[in-house]
Length: 80
Image (cartoon, rainbow, N blue to C red; front, side, top):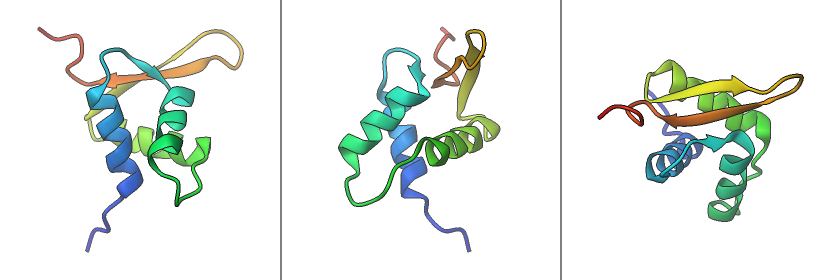
């Protein structure tokens, strides 16, 4: 039996409703506004983002030098 992952669902909702690619930090901040009953950490968010990327629902890319940042967008964002 697969347990529903409300955090993953909220992340997907944020990305699908965005009109531009988002950094991991931006997604984390939006989640903290929506969910106050659960501790939201960058690690939890990044883990769920990678699961969604593996499922092919979203795409992500590491940009910048050194530590850099990850940006995320809908899988069909650039298709017309």
